[in-house]
Length: 343
Image (cartoon, rainbow, N blue to C red):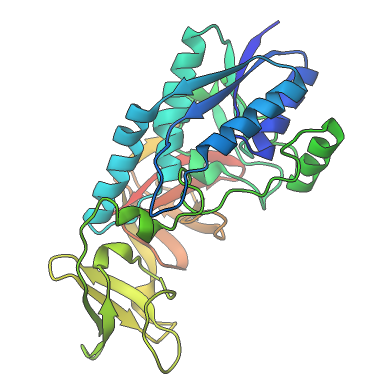
């Protein structure tokens, strides 16, 4: 009987993943990854409740339960990197960093050292022979967040929910009597619950007010609370009164300036050509002559295009809000080749 350590976050997905693996005959051990415990902006970090929910689910499933503490490593490899990226004017994705550095590197290593043969998580994805494949439920597919996982890690990983839909998972949780069956999905930053990104960054970055300028005319339309908090394509939270909605088209970090437009078809909001850095290919690099599918945000529509060995991407049509620091993932039908970070 193989031993499999399941990352249990206290949510319904990972709870059902653990239950399904036990049903399949594995010796299952539930593990809560204690990554972040700090309260932010007067909002309590939900880790204690999440831990209690994970422990309660493990008790119902009747599996051993452990807590792995990764707080120092998480601060270094996820939080500090995220803050540095925002300070540089880019918009990173901490969920991707967490999967790369914590769940499928640190957790995997610790689990194997503790006696596991495999690990599992509640991600909606599939894997086969070290390849990453999209989930059957396209609405819940989470491979965008997993593209930086290595082939070696995937060979030692199981995704029990890869063939299921979210309603099916909820139904299974209820049938199994899991205490997480009706627990809402988490929102906001992956590790601090409901706290918004501005409130979180304010704990680490000293930001100053600055001008919001019309990109075309240069006229000042308002004042922002720090250019670091804004991202390309953003239309909420600008505080510009009158007229239609405005969209962020760019930032001047040196001058602490945010540029906007009220033209939703402004060319600065779209791009069909960009360059990716920090390229990561799971099994094989793409061919410069082949057409692939590209996704620039979670659940964004896939767009056909090509990429060369240097990370130069050309899409068949423009995509909105191509933002420095964000990831673009490359698909070959259901196979995730990998991707890179927009520069």
